[in-house]
Image 1 (cartoon, each protein chain N blue to C red):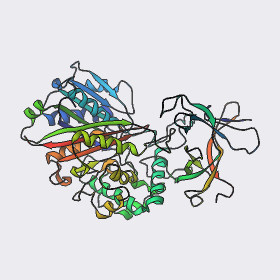
Image 2 (image 1 turned 60 degrees about the vertical axis):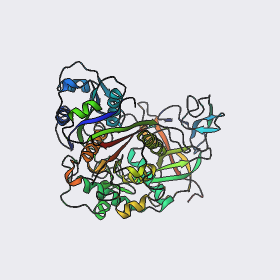
Image 3 (image 1 turned 180 degrees about the horizontal axis):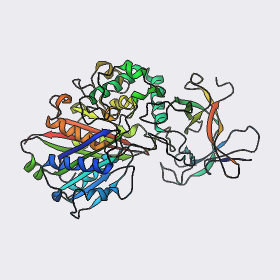
Image 4 (image 1 turned 180 degrees about the vertical axis):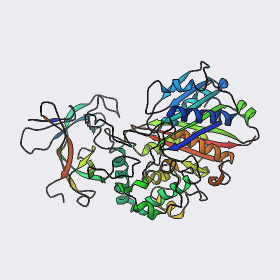
Length: 140
Length: 383
């Protein structure tokens, strides 16, 4: 049973056990700016971009705990909710994804590290995974 | 704009969670607008239908209920800004001389996919990772960190809009008694720090607006003041540091400042000239930030406006006078047109208990996820 990205082209999963997923981004030499996900061309300069890989750690820009993901509803989510964060990577890219842990664990400015989260299973038994964040070692 | 454009008729069907069909709601709102304008559908030169859900044929099919006159009928879809975008297309038709009278008609059922889980879970994607409730909560938590904004400020904004909706019989949320900030805070949490009573309604509804040349508006005014479309602006995103490209996003927030400044320049007015404002208040953090991004107050001073009650009806600059997205409700198709409906009635002095005293200029702002920002400025003119 393998772990495969839920969609191709957004991140890769290193073969080493426990290694963080690596985001597949773009770099624009003309604008000196990084992007994620990959761009077909630089949205600022409209010039070509280069494929690149981005850092696996960043800092929390903002966070929340989603108890009820259905807008307009007055009923709590049966799943118990989940944490989520916007995270700034050193390259200047902001990523939003679910955040492991519970409310009270997180604060703006904390260091977090990319991880994977299982979101489904393929017919052949492969696990579909997406990206998530967890507090980095020493990031508490 | 090439030719001056005026709102000559507005119509609405009550927003809310009910079983009335989209087709019936669209008909009621369309006929209401035609009767308000005192014209026949035969005088309409083009029709823009705005809806998010349903079938791709619905717009032109529902138009047949109004009449088979052969006019161009176009379906417009732009997420939450669908109704605003349909209105802008109608304005452009009259402004550009395509026709002398144009109509925008928005309708939608409940926002399934945002409001209720689909019956069969779709294959997950990278973009479906998070929903809008999380996105606006990110804004709120960051605002609390940077500015010291409190959850009580968010609760006061939401309570205001619930209470404005009490004076609008077409609003989704009809509270029997005045809503207090304490009541809002006691509701179940949606996404910290937003409770369920801070989240926009997500029911059904329909609304319509008809625009025309000044010559026609004067003929049909019947003693009422004219309502001029003083500005119509739309912008998509430009890059900002921290730009997010993936997921349910509305922003970057600077889109509002950029689009509003274009609208102010087109209308030849400043923010201080406004009498009332409608915004995309899906959550109160949005309304709070738009106080500043629209130039109603300097950056960082929105909390003070709330504390002073300045954005309540009777205050210095009332916001969301029909209840806004939080109180009136927010089906994607008609919301922007409901804003035009309320501002037009306000400028005519026809708003009853929710009337803003001596209303002269109103601004309607909508964000559409993806994202776009649309701003219209309407101005009362005596004749």
